[in-house]
Length: 558
Image (cartoon, one colour):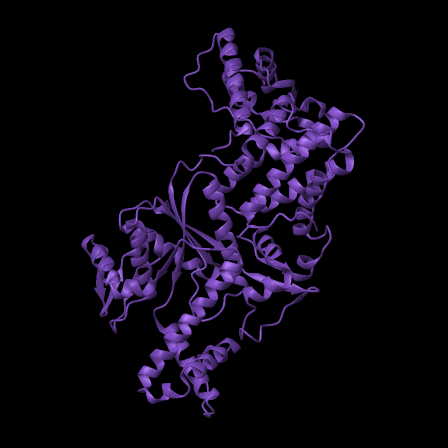
C-alpha cells in the first residue's frame, strides 16, 4: 500500500490555486501568456514566514510590466483556497501562506491508517536498480572504511525500495588475481610456522592474526599432510582454504550488521566463462579497441576519459579494468535500468573509464551512478585509534560494532554526507545520554512506549478522536515533522543521499521531546488527552518506520 503523500497533495493544491489566480489576473489585465511559468512553492526557512512561500510574483513582474509587489497584490486578491488560513506579501514580493491545521490532522489519521506503510510512495515507478557495494577482496576482515560504505549502501537500498524502486543489492567478490595468490602464500607460510618450521613471511603479505588463525585451522584439520603435496598444490590449497574462511567471516560480519545481499557475484565466473574476452570482442566490433605496443587498448578517451586504457597487457594478462568492463556489461545484460556503485575515495579516478565502457556498449552515461564514500577516522578521547593487532594494519568493522553496538555504529556511519571525511567519536557513540544522537532518538521511542503502556482505561483510541484540540505550537511542529517524512524519503531517493534519513530521525525525535516537555499528555481535559495520546501513537509509528529504514532497533525501554 502506498502512502498518500499529504505534503505533495498540499503543494499540488497550492500550485493549482495559484494557477487559477494567475488565470484571473491575466484575463483581467488583458495579457497574453504564450507560456506559463513553472509555479513553485517551497517551505520557508523561517517559521514566521508561514508554511509555504512562492516567488511567482517576481517571475511575472516583467510580463505584467510592474513591480513584483504589485504583481503579488494582484495574485493575492485573486487567490482563494480552503487550505490557507492566512496569506501575506513579504520582502520584494514573496507570497507566504499559513495553512489551516486540518491538513495536519488528516496526516495524523493517515499515519495511523497506513501504519508501517506510512512513507511508502511510487516515486520510483518500479525502475530496476542494482546497487553494488562493499565488494571487498576476500583476503581479510572488513574494516571501518568498508563499514561506512556498507551502511550507506544498505540504507540507500531501503530508501529506494520504500519509494517504489525494484532494488537488488549485490556484492562483487574480487576472488581472482594477484591478491588471492598473496593470500595463499601468506597462509602457507603461517601454516609452516605453526608446524614449527623457520620460514619468513614474504615482503608483500597479509600479516594480521587472522592469517595465523586460518593456518591453525588447517593444521587442526589436515595436520602436516599439506606439506606432502607439490609446492603449487600447497599454495592452491591454502589459497582456497583461506578464501573460504575470509568470505565466510565477511558474510557473518555483514549479517550481524543487519546487511544482506541478493547476489554474491564471483569475479572468477567472468574468467571461467570467457566473459572478459567476449566483452572485449564486443567493444572491438563497435570499433573501440585497437592494438599498440603488443597491448590491447580501449578507446576510453572517445567517451570523456582523459586517455585510452589498456585492457590486455603486452604479456597477455588482462587488466582489472577488463574484468570491470565485463562485469558491468553483465549487469546491463541482466536488464537493470540503473546501476549504482558505492566506492571508496581511492577509486575516484576509476569512474570515468567505467562510465566510458557503459557508453561504448550503447547505454547512456548516467546509466551508472557512482557514489564515492570518503574516509573514516576513529577517535577515542580526541585521539586517533591505533591499528588493530588482529587485522594487522586497520581496525575491523566487527571491533567497532562490538565496542559501540550495532545501532550506534550504523547511525554514525550514515549520519554525514558521503562526500565529507568523517571522524567517528567512539566515546560519544557509547554514551547513554542525550549527547549521543542514537540514544536521543531511541529514547524518544522508549518514552512513547512508556506512555502507551501506562494509559488510563478511559482513553479509548478506538472511538472518534477530535484532533482539533491540538493547537499548541509544539503539537503543530511535531505534526509538520511527521507530514514531511514521505517527502524526505523521496528527496533522499532522488539525490541518492542516505544521510537525510539519519538527520530526519534526529529532528523527529527532537520534535517529540519538545512536545513532551511542553505539553502534558494526560490532562484533566479528557478530549485533549485523547487527542495527544493519538498524536503520540502516530509519532511512535513514524519513528519506527524511519528507524526501520536506518536498520536500527526501536527499543521499548532504555
